Image (cartoon, rainbow, N blue to C red; front, side, top):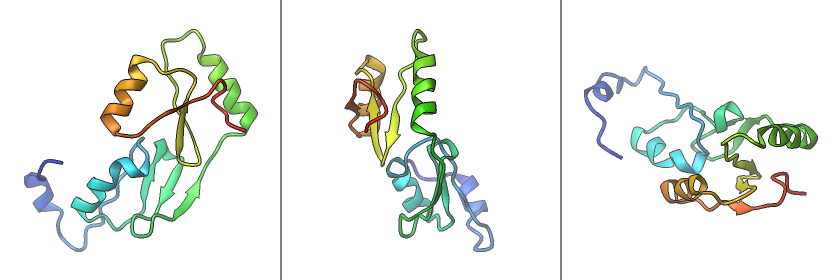
Length: 120
């Protein structure tokens, strides 16, 4: 990660609480948490999890029922979308497309292939 610029110097005040919210998984933002010395809970998975960065404990998480998740995936069929579904911190995909390959290279995380994205 690049060195923080001038903006970072302005918020290094100990009275300022820096919180991070992202669509990424927790492991993907660990370098940012460490370098920015974030102590407040982080919001990951597009708001689906709230995690304590000091001990990696999940404070709160939101999930979809299996049937609803499968319906959402079925609705995506025919669109040029490659869903990656996270189950127990493991990403799954219906097929390994170029976009999925690019994602694995970019993040360094492997995606498991499943005939159905909702593992049993």
